[in-house]
Image (tube, rainbow, N blue to C red; front, side, top):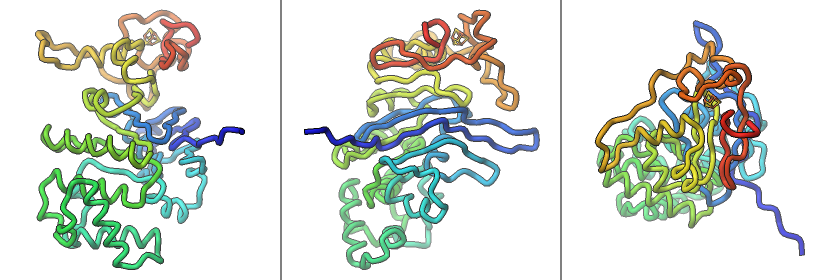
Length: 323
Ligand code: SF4
């Protein structure tokens, strides 16, 4: 009996994103290849401005007007990036959804929570009756730990943490194959953050959805994700399973990021000297070279490629063979 091939929740090939600015064209994301399996969570980390949020928006197809993307994005085996606009809009919510950082900017304060759900569900499934849509909404709220009796409340009647859970409920009510969560807990206190991360973890296993968790917080990745990808200046410089990357980071940038984490026994603060490059004119070769303590002549000549540095780990650095 032949095995049935299961498409990954997300597959990206050669994805680049450029922005037109008054100073010229900025390539914010540069030639990314990435896969997330069904039921798998991948954490995407890196300093502000490294391109991680742009990558999340490009996956979902909601770049601002001045941005343009090249490359292929497939969701559950379907070439999402090549779909006509109308079909892509339809697939958003039912095949892929994006959870943002600021729920209050996404929820209309004049609409009851129930109206948000009914509008969303019927935009994708016009044949769904209002009553059925309300039932689906109650179930999604229940999964988020929000009493379904609050379905007809307005957004301002909920706390910040509850509003974020409502956003996630809206994101998963149609059971998408992939959820992209961009800093979903940044504005919340640590207790609510822990609750939301637990919910995301439960969802990915019970619904077998893929989760791309974009965050600057490595602790969250360690707690929630199966794999981690580290981005620097528009490129992925290291990727692997969480235990390997956290215990044996190979790329000097990942090493610096992990060193700058604060632990209970931290006595001295550490940070990576220097600043990320200007993406209008990135340095030739390795983009981390101006900040790297191990820089060698070849580092400034050719761009290193991701190569195996362990059974479940790849890094783009000339310190390792194959780069
Ligand atoms: Fe440093 Fe060279 Fe590795 Fe870049 S390729 S991280 S400059 S050692």
